[in-house]
Image (cartoon, rainbow, N blue to C red):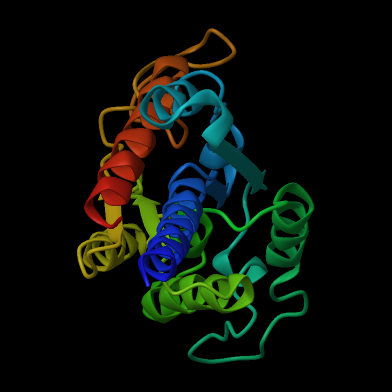
Length: 240
């Protein structure tokens, strides 16, 4: 009887150890960060500030970043179900998203512990007056990504449009899209947004002085990377 009890205890210990090992492996797995958007995301260099901040928080071998961005593009190039309030649906809906997803699938070799989607876009939609469908499109894009990745726990960070176009008649829906980005970024415990209003003054990548520019300064992009990283760390710690 005593030998039987010893065997049972040993088996229980093996089960507990296996469970703890599996938990530890999951806990120590990779954190995936997906970056996309238009020109201000194109110019963001993750190695300047975004990656270092994340590696400091999670470890160098636990951070995987996939970036795919293209300047001057509306959200329809990402959201496959995009359609305007009036008129025809343009060809090519979702083609940039397909390229992004292909890069993600090529880079990911194990199920990530967490996934964070970082989005910096909206200037083109503000200019084309597509603000009326931007909220549904942005939420639709997030859900599209969650569905394709088969995850319900994707964190979502939005870079709010800067103050550049608030008084610019060429961007009639600028304020509308800013408001939508804040609304969505504040609507879910897994969502967040960052302010970029103070990042578009100073010296740009080409050494030119800029004031209230459409694009960020060289230092502005570094600060933007830190802010995205800080928000990502906050969401990951808040939503284990």
